[in-house]
Image (tube, rainbow, N blue to C red; front, side, top):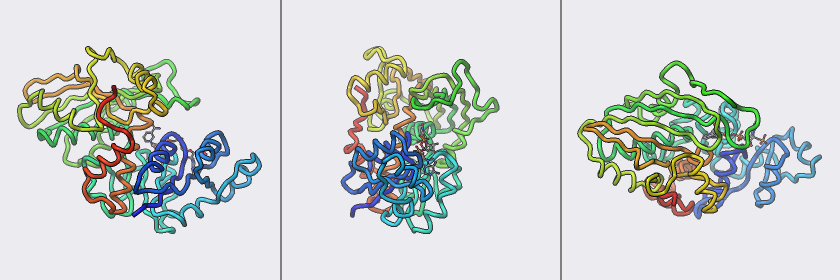
Length: 342
Ligand SMILES: NC(=O)c1ccc[n+]([C@@H]2O[C@H](COP(=O)([O-])OP(=O)(O)OC[C@H]3O[C@@H](n4cnc5c(N)ncnc54)[C@H](OP(=O)(O)O)[C@@H]3O)[C@@H](O)[C@H]2O)c1
């Protein structure tokens, strides 16, 4: 079965998910929708993607000489699944239209959890998403936390998690966001929404997070403290992390990679497309184990970490793969995700 997929919103996440869908053997990218006739539209066309927009925007594209294949309604009439990658809050506004065309819906982390039947992470709750009408792929920070938590929880049951989120201020393309010269608690009150968002997937988990925004665009960093129900062994923790292809352990003592800047430099030098790092990066030499307690430092490439989860969500909604690991492995193979940075 080939699933016909449309993407509404061709920005940071939408363009990456579009490229990923177009590579999958069991999916067809029917087209992408956006509202501004700009360089993004020209790039979509240059890749051979069919381009759609709102009916009242068609003229704007035509005036700029950018060919459009139709309206969002035309796109919806040709697909099985819509991936909504519009800015947070817009997905809910589109939901009625998507429903009218009886398409399955995938929303992103900027939407409120209530937008979809369930919040989704492949390793935590793939089976719960099978055959649903809609899912919400949680945000980049939440995806990073969930990948770690569900991986470790399958080795040792977790009692509680406390995490500090050091957030990038903006994506590299954004020119209107900050801060430029400040560290901003986000919010000052604790907990931040990140732990609450983790609980939309793992309601049983005792987790509290706090966050600050810093003036950087490359990646987020998390300092994570986990208490397990039993005494843990560091070798077993390392084995769990090494076993997950969507987690890349790096050792700064061996590689010299001590910052997000150097992670991105490696990705650039390796010729990774857009320097994307969809793997969760965990510093092996940050691991601190004492009895039941673990602390570590991890980095999240916000622009690309949710891409593989969006692909798995399509297979779950469309019931084309029942086994989470089968989808997980196929997505990783096609996207070249191998559990290591270098
Ligand atoms: N960026 C991240 O780090 C990140 C990480 C994980 C999850 N997310 C989530 O992913 C979602 C998308 O974020 P993003 O960063 O990709 O946003 P973005 O870069 O601003 O892209 C949004 C896209 O949606 C289009 N758009 C805006 N209004 C629209 C409308 N009414 N109808 C159709 N398309 C519309 C924009 O079109 P034009 O370009 O034509 O104006 C743009 O292509 C959000 O929920 C966000 O929270 C973002």
